[in-house]
Image (cartoon, rainbow, N blue to C red; front, side):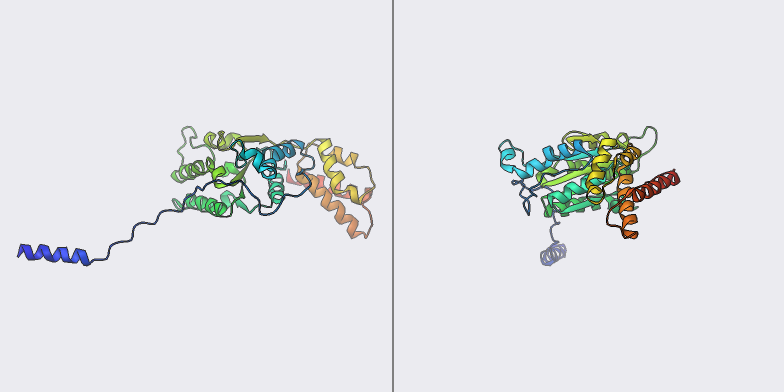
Length: 291
């Protein structure tokens, strides 16, 4: 009968297993305690040879908050704000971010288009979210985003259509960047092409500090050479600094490595003019070969 059929259906529904409720995603936010470090900061102040502006900004905006957290917490400042570095390739942006992370002794996470890029829909946004969740679980921590322009470019490119997965990646970043202080995750963004990066990414609240990093002048090169080669050489480094001024810090680092190599190969006790000259020729030849 109809009654028996209805009763049977009701009985089967009562006996059927109930589906598990959907799992809530892991929250991306957490309360923000005072930003304690796992180990005390080094007693010596943070310093970047040849980069006085970045040295000052990193000390004021980041190191000071960790060194004296109570003074900042008194005014509701519990964590440093994010920093965006931009400038020509080779000006020392990535090295500066690396050295700050090392000085702070925090867990470090690197994010680039090569790490999060995927041809599958939603996959890149998922990877971005997972990386920040890992950073949050180990907070306080540092996330260094290199070559931001590769995957955080403007969402509107005139008449050119923008792919959906690119919009989704940018939206995921915008969701996270405004809350990184609450997550106790310091983000250092790096780009060679600031004008290409989506304007919403660069806004205050996401990156409070935006710094242009220029090529080193003669004084900056000299400071690096004195720090890196001074202990090993009695030569006047001024002519070498003059030849490298205006060129990338990467060339200065290369000269330092080659000069030490030449001296070691010749079994010398000190780096002399011959070693400096050979190293400088190699740097300039490499520059010409690279165009």
